[in-house]
Image (cartoon, rainbow, N blue to C red; front, side, top):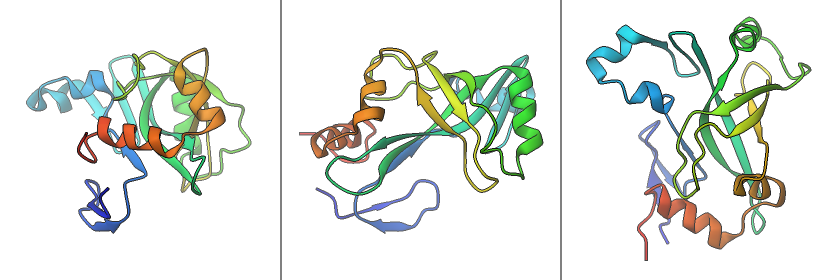
Length: 167
Protein backbone atom coordinates (compact mmCIF):
# COMPACT_ATOMS: atom_id res chain seq x y z
CA UNK A 1 0.00 0.00 0.00
CA UNK A 2 0.98 3.65 -0.43
CA UNK A 3 3.00 5.22 2.37
CA UNK A 4 2.19 8.82 1.43
CA UNK A 5 -0.28 10.85 -0.61
CA UNK A 6 -0.73 14.37 -1.94
CA UNK A 7 -3.77 16.01 -0.39
CA UNK A 8 -6.18 17.38 -3.01
CA UNK A 9 -7.31 20.09 -0.57
CA UNK A 10 -4.00 21.54 0.63
CA UNK A 11 -1.58 20.15 -1.99
CA UNK A 12 0.83 18.91 0.70
CA UNK A 13 2.28 15.39 0.79
CA UNK A 14 1.14 13.51 3.91
CA UNK A 15 2.53 10.30 5.39
CA UNK A 16 0.24 7.28 5.50
CA UNK A 17 -3.02 6.69 3.66
CA UNK A 18 -5.87 9.18 3.25
CA UNK A 19 -8.42 9.04 6.05
CA UNK A 20 -11.03 11.22 4.40
CA UNK A 21 -12.73 12.07 1.13
CA UNK A 22 -14.97 15.02 0.41
CA UNK A 23 -16.88 16.97 -2.18
CA UNK A 24 -16.60 20.65 -3.03
CA UNK A 25 -20.33 20.93 -3.76
CA UNK A 26 -23.56 18.93 -3.68
CA UNK A 27 -23.88 16.73 -6.79
CA UNK A 28 -26.83 18.70 -8.21
CA UNK A 29 -24.82 21.93 -8.01
CA UNK A 30 -21.60 20.35 -9.33
CA UNK A 31 -23.59 19.07 -12.34
CA UNK A 32 -24.34 22.63 -13.45
CA UNK A 33 -21.78 23.67 -16.11
CA UNK A 34 -19.10 25.84 -14.52
CA UNK A 35 -19.91 29.07 -16.37
CA UNK A 36 -23.53 28.84 -15.16
CA UNK A 37 -22.87 27.43 -11.68
CA UNK A 38 -22.27 30.75 -9.89
CA UNK A 39 -25.26 32.30 -11.68
CA UNK A 40 -27.62 29.57 -10.43
CA UNK A 41 -26.20 28.79 -6.99
CA UNK A 42 -24.62 30.64 -4.08
CA UNK A 43 -21.93 28.65 -2.33
CA UNK A 44 -18.89 28.71 -0.09
CA UNK A 45 -16.80 25.86 1.26
CA UNK A 46 -19.45 25.15 3.93
CA UNK A 47 -22.79 26.48 2.67
CA UNK A 48 -24.77 26.23 -0.55
CA UNK A 49 -28.10 27.44 -1.86
CA UNK A 50 -29.61 26.35 -5.16
CA UNK A 51 -32.93 28.12 -5.66
CA UNK A 52 -35.10 27.07 -2.72
CA UNK A 53 -32.75 24.20 -1.74
CA UNK A 54 -30.24 24.53 1.10
CA UNK A 55 -27.12 22.48 1.80
CA UNK A 56 -24.55 22.27 4.61
CA UNK A 57 -21.16 20.58 4.34
CA UNK A 58 -20.96 17.92 7.04
CA UNK A 59 -18.81 15.09 8.29
CA UNK A 60 -19.90 11.45 8.26
CA UNK A 61 -17.52 9.44 10.46
CA UNK A 62 -16.84 5.71 10.12
CA UNK A 63 -14.79 4.50 13.09
CA UNK A 64 -11.86 2.23 12.36
CA UNK A 65 -11.94 -1.19 14.06
CA UNK A 66 -8.24 -2.01 13.72
CA UNK A 67 -6.59 1.38 14.22
CA UNK A 68 -7.34 4.61 16.07
CA UNK A 69 -9.59 7.36 14.74
CA UNK A 70 -12.08 7.24 11.84
CA UNK A 71 -12.56 7.57 8.09
CA UNK A 72 -14.32 10.85 7.36
CA UNK A 73 -16.66 11.49 4.46
CA UNK A 74 -16.97 15.25 3.81
CA UNK A 75 -20.50 15.17 2.42
CA UNK A 76 -23.11 17.78 1.62
CA UNK A 77 -26.48 17.42 3.29
CA UNK A 78 -29.69 19.05 2.09
CA UNK A 79 -31.66 20.56 4.98
CA UNK A 80 -34.84 22.57 5.37
CA UNK A 81 -34.54 26.36 5.03
CA UNK A 82 -35.14 27.09 8.76
CA UNK A 83 -32.43 24.59 9.77
CA UNK A 84 -30.01 26.11 7.25
CA UNK A 85 -30.66 29.61 8.58
CA UNK A 86 -30.25 28.41 12.18
CA UNK A 87 -26.90 26.90 11.24
CA UNK A 88 -25.85 30.20 9.66
CA UNK A 89 -26.84 32.01 12.91
CA UNK A 90 -24.65 29.61 14.89
CA UNK A 91 -21.80 29.45 12.36
CA UNK A 92 -19.29 31.30 14.58
CA UNK A 93 -20.74 29.95 17.83
CA UNK A 94 -21.08 26.62 19.58
CA UNK A 95 -24.10 24.81 18.16
CA UNK A 96 -23.36 21.52 19.91
CA UNK A 97 -26.28 21.89 22.33
CA UNK A 98 -28.81 22.27 19.50
CA UNK A 99 -31.13 19.36 18.75
CA UNK A 100 -30.09 17.38 15.65
CA UNK A 101 -31.93 18.36 12.46
CA UNK A 102 -33.06 16.06 9.63
CA UNK A 103 -31.45 16.11 6.22
CA UNK A 104 -30.58 13.99 3.22
CA UNK A 105 -27.19 13.17 1.69
CA UNK A 106 -26.56 15.21 -1.48
CA UNK A 107 -23.53 13.29 -2.83
CA UNK A 108 -23.16 9.87 -4.46
CA UNK A 109 -20.57 8.12 -2.31
CA UNK A 110 -18.35 5.69 -4.26
CA UNK A 111 -18.37 2.11 -3.04
CA UNK A 112 -21.97 2.24 -1.78
CA UNK A 113 -25.43 1.57 -3.09
CA UNK A 114 -27.16 4.90 -3.81
CA UNK A 115 -26.60 7.48 -1.09
CA UNK A 116 -28.18 10.59 -2.62
CA UNK A 117 -31.39 11.23 -0.68
CA UNK A 118 -30.38 8.94 2.18
CA UNK A 119 -31.83 10.33 5.45
CA UNK A 120 -29.46 11.59 8.12
CA UNK A 121 -29.55 13.54 11.38
CA UNK A 122 -27.25 16.59 11.47
CA UNK A 123 -25.67 17.60 14.78
CA UNK A 124 -24.17 21.09 14.75
CA UNK A 125 -20.77 21.42 16.44
CA UNK A 126 -18.51 24.20 17.71
CA UNK A 127 -17.42 27.03 15.44
CA UNK A 128 -14.27 25.20 14.28
CA UNK A 129 -15.92 21.88 13.35
CA UNK A 130 -18.30 20.85 10.63
CA UNK A 131 -21.62 19.34 11.66
CA UNK A 132 -21.56 15.58 12.19
CA UNK A 133 -24.17 13.33 10.58
CA UNK A 134 -25.72 10.08 11.70
CA UNK A 135 -27.16 7.94 8.93
CA UNK A 136 -30.76 6.78 9.40
CA UNK A 137 -32.60 3.74 8.07
CA UNK A 138 -31.28 0.37 6.93
CA UNK A 139 -28.51 1.40 4.50
CA UNK A 140 -25.12 -0.35 4.81
CA UNK A 141 -23.65 2.94 6.07
CA UNK A 142 -25.75 2.63 9.24
CA UNK A 143 -23.91 -0.56 10.21
CA UNK A 144 -20.50 0.83 9.26
CA UNK A 145 -21.11 3.98 11.27
CA UNK A 146 -22.27 1.98 14.27
CA UNK A 147 -19.86 -0.97 14.18
CA UNK A 148 -16.88 0.57 12.36
CA UNK A 149 -14.88 -0.59 9.35
CA UNK A 150 -12.04 -3.09 9.29
CA UNK A 151 -8.85 -2.63 7.27
CA UNK A 152 -10.21 -4.62 4.31
CA UNK A 153 -13.23 -2.30 4.03
CA UNK A 154 -10.96 0.74 4.48
CA UNK A 155 -8.89 -0.54 1.53
CA UNK A 156 -12.07 -1.01 -0.54
CA UNK A 157 -13.09 2.61 0.20
CA UNK A 158 -9.63 3.87 -0.81
CA UNK A 159 -9.89 1.97 -4.11
CA UNK A 160 -13.47 3.19 -4.73
CA UNK A 161 -12.46 6.83 -4.18
CA UNK A 162 -9.40 6.48 -6.40
CA UNK A 163 -7.05 7.20 -3.50
CA UNK A 164 -5.11 4.01 -4.29
CA UNK A 165 -5.10 1.58 -7.21
CA UNK A 166 -7.27 -1.50 -7.21
CA UNK A 167 -6.26 -5.15 -7.42
